[in-house]
Image (cartoon, rainbow, N blue to C red; front, side, top):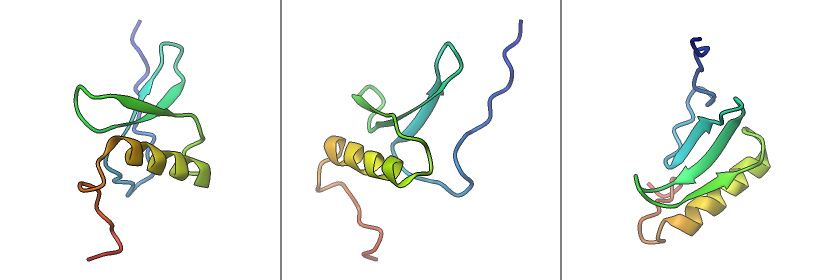
Amino acid sequence: MLEPERRDPRAPGDRRMYLYFNYSESGSLRWYVKVSHKGRRIGISEEYGTPAFDAAYEAGVAALVPAALRTDPSRT
């Protein structure tokens, strides 16, 4: 039996680096932060689009990306 087509659950315009998702075997959506192709990943259990999700994303990036490589979008 063919699987139903799954669309990208990101909001239009959400271009955050290191944010990935996949679907579990039961079909539930899982979000995680991953920096390198073979590197460690940190799961995000909060609901997408909430301030708690944004805080969990930022914490995951801070844990995985060295401070020297992080960019501050407010400084242009």
